[in-house]
Image 1: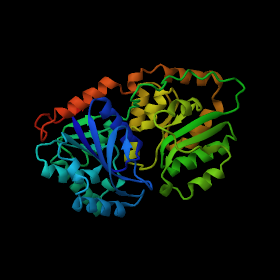
Image 2: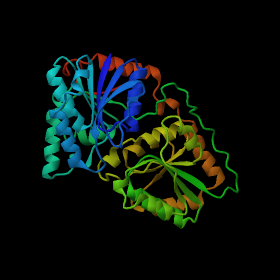
Image 3: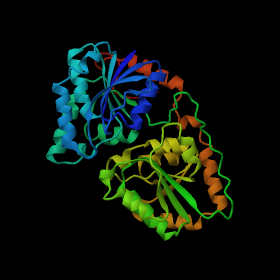
Image 4: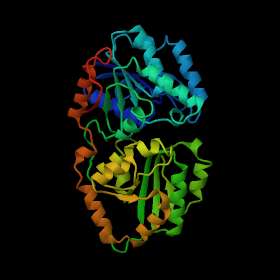
Length: 391
């Protein structure tokens, strides 16, 4: 089966993971997308890449212009679409391009993949309402919606924008295409006199409130807690990310990492996984299940999270991690780390280690099931009843 995959950013780690999953399931993938770097990649896995144009973080109008340009000048990617069996479109802007292809290739299912609810889709302003109307209109010709969290389904797609389509819940679980990465990390045997605990904040680094909170906590605890940051910072979300880090005595930014090969190493160096996000407070950050909880779970790091969020719903069911109340985060974390001792940490780490790997990982049979599921879609949603499906 050939999958035509329209993506918003060819360098997005979640895009790479989805491509690898589809390929492991037996699909041939062709990518069409924008890129947020100076040069577009030529391949992702073995998938051919058709680059559109460079776009930039926090530049909505520029991205909108780029999408319109791609809509009207499609000759360089349209020839690669004619033998596709299914179109998947990551995010709303790419769904617009997918709809154009579907108009030419009527007998092909269209899938909308939405793994975040952008802040512009929320709120009561005129632009917010227009974008939600556009989304409802664009989804009408799709056969399926793929999303990554029950929070998105119940709080947005069913409650706010009332999308009446079959939904595939496909969580952001860890996937290693060759299953070659060692995915168990022994419970840390900390020495009683070890002087600090290390929090790892990995992945998409875009929450300036988290950085401020970690700065305050590490200063107050005077080195009992250190923070290691790895990943791709959204520099536009910070006033001066690199300068701020340089001024922090207990926080270190160690750059990007290679997915999935570097994960075992970077998680082996930390005690806790920072699973707190304020990036789109009141919406996306309360509803999402981010990649880092699955990666941290795979490598047995103890998650730190906020109560009364979708992350909390998942982690509390598993009885793992450190949950904090939103209204006294500073005080709660200060008290927790000031009273944490060697045996208490060992107990927390052991609980994380005992969670079944299936909670965190996707395997090759599930990838094959995903490809079969996509292959059985009808031209519209006639092959599926409205409802939520899981692999």
